[in-house]
Image 1 (cartoon, one colour):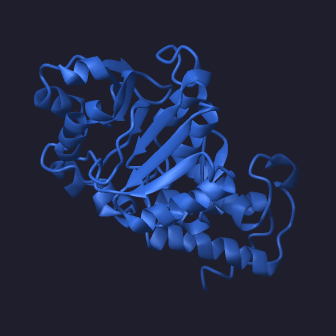
Image 2 (spheres, helix red, strand yellow):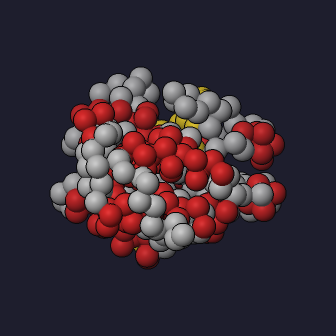
Length: 298
């Protein structure tokens, strides 16, 4: 019997239970929006059936049509057989309750910097309304640029990426939030083609995965652009360039907020003289650091 023809799966509850079993049996890897089979199955079922993502209970025992069942089973089949991250199947990712368009031209938005922008980087930024210029280096899908524009209501935000195809996705998201007048996107190899400007805030989620970790990545992560993840032998290849060039683009009181994932040991080995502030989010510790222009200049 085809996996797309399961007449005994009558309700949404049945489809979710079946999805959890299939995901667990398939030993898929999570980390692109959910961290467990239940949440992933619920998301894929509700999204495929065009139901509200935050309203499962009223629909649990609703019966599905045969073509709806086939659509859900087809999505589950791709998730498992192709090890495709769920956001690439649905063309959306959710970050801090906000929806962003994604496809495999960009990595799936998941940066813990997003949570810090909820509070406009308080207490490191005393008054978000005084921030004039923000730079989102390695902007990818543009999600952090959008969140920064919302966090700093009077700031102009520049998003920079070397990938022209990533910038096409970013442009889509900037448009979806109607922020064309406040966010500019630039194709550049880091700071190379960026016009001089004194940024009050630089946020950056660069490629930082070290070579050994790249070799061990689960298959799901191999669907993401290699250049957006790989950071060289120790993961610090781009970080070295960013920290070297950033001071020239920072205002006197400017700060740099940098994500480095699980590479703290490699960061400290590469920059033994730097003493950053390590910023914790609810889901990440030792993964985000803050440096001032004064620290970087010295």
